[in-house]
Image 1 (cartoon, helix red, strand yellow):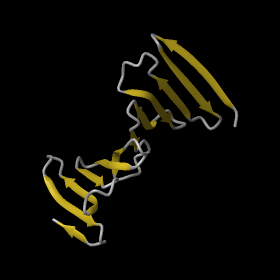
Image 2 (cartoon, rainbow, N blue to C red):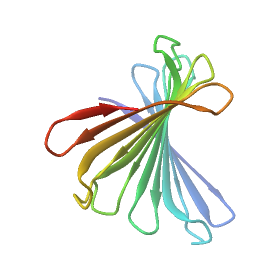
Image 3 (cartoon, one colour):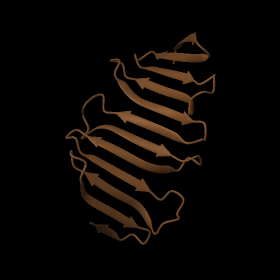
Image 4 (cartoon, rainbow, N blue to C red):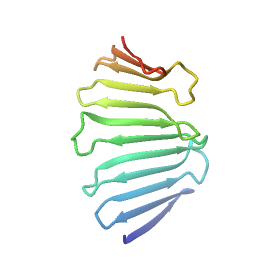
Length: 142
């Protein structure tokens, strides 16, 4: 795949833009001054210039990835995923098109008696439902 690389330098930060043949592009920003909580941010845009996702690589080894529904073909407008320093998914937070939220917490280090704890919120922020999946496989809805 042919790649055009353009580098821009600005106040200790270096940005790398990669433009792909299909019209998509990826922008990588490095915290060269080491004055941010992140060391690297990767942003990806589709061929229409709409942001697809943003990937924060934090100084402590954790990651936060925000996925945007730029095509408006999902029930959510954005999804935020957080990974611990060992690369295990910690949680996922969905912002739904109707203003509600779905937050899924994963027991990535196996210290709880449940594997996932899902909490659903209405548009006003009130808890509407919780679904707990236990290590035994049983599911409880509150």
